[in-house]
Length: 211
Ligand SMILES: NC(=O)c1ccc[n+]([C@@H]2O[C@H](COP(=O)([O-])OP(=O)(O)OC[C@H]3O[C@@H](n4cnc5c(N)ncnc54)[C@H](O)[C@@H]3O)[C@@H](O)[C@H]2O)c1
Image (cartoon, rainbow, N blue to C red):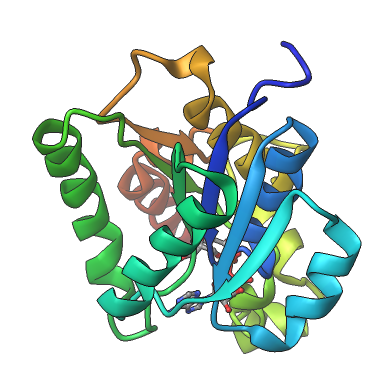
């Protein structure tokens, strides 16, 4: 694969100040894109822009606020002359989390049909990020397992750990011309965990437990 797969492209990355979004910002920049980070974490603005340099800009944008979203698009077009890619990370409350996970795939498919542009999703397995802090149950903590250990143990692939950069790599593929005819797809980056039928495993475990 080439190393300038986004040369000449302009991207907005929401939730780009931290976590998977930030990894994607760095990856897109290294592939030649100009990137606007749209986030609510304004305290990180200066350090990020200073470190990432000229090809990056930051704007305060709460993605739940349509005014902010419109301003972000106008800002981007004014600053870099156009907009090619929207990559959306972050912006869901915990309450809406489960609903939004399902709804987002439906929205993506609808948008892919309605607007005549490419729209896709990436669905990751668990990645250690701020979002996952505190997600380890007490019983597991007592076994001295952190989130990453836990995810590796219950994952499908053995001896491989999912990192934010792996999600960024999937986002890069979908955003680049390598995927020029790929639209309406939900790309799972989960080591195949979603194709495993957990009820079988649970049945076997409970049978063995009873034996
Ligand atoms: N980390 C995982 O294991 C995992 C797994 C599956 C899906 N995801 C999804 O990936 C996305 C990013 O996850 P992460 O782990 O990098 O999270 P994170 O908390 O590390 O980073 C999220 C970023 O989004 C920003 N953000 C939050 N609310 C916002 C809003 N209203 N408007 C604009 N920006 C906002 C935050 O300021 C932060 O910079 C989330 O949508 C999450 O649901 C994460």
